[in-house]
Length: 248
Image (cartoon, one colour):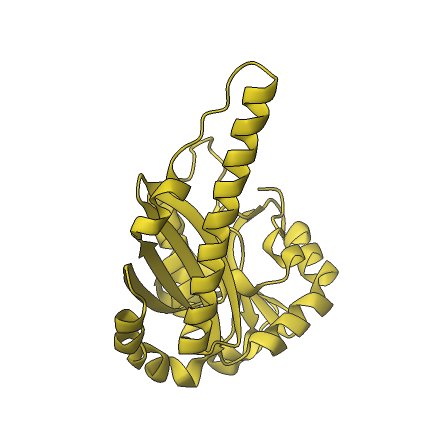
């Protein structure tokens, strides 16, 4: 039997804390393609899974939402380590081996993330001073002086964008004071830049964090600000845990 895996959590947070040696049904939750959801025990952990049949059909946006919904439900009850979307273990042995191999890393990550939540901030920056830095630089097909000039100009504009994004992320960090953060930046149109920020915070301070939104919106000039969360800590797993993927 193949298993589709959503996340790993402490077994005490599922099945009313009762221990089991066999997969147990998690009532009231539907998984990918409407499948039942089970807790698959392994030591102190439980992998949240659904039975899965490989039939050649590609997983799509609908399944992304179904996956996220299961992880979010589990997150309400305790610490979760989300598996990458599309993680499938073809056998019971493959699933158990993945947990055994990563048991120490799982344990350390659960300890570090216990009682923590992820918040998202999206800043769309529309600043007249950035217009030149956002213009697309086309590199000529030929080599030589013109190519090198354009290459230097392109690199200069990329540095200018990164500097602006870094300055804003520092300002945001001071306003929201998270435990950890992860920042990405990309151009969205001719005069706009999107800065996507994930913040790791104490779950008990979610309301306090949300209340800082109005103050931040006033202080961040020339920015459109959107906030969402709390979410499971997708962005704050060690790299090796993000890639546990069975035979997906």
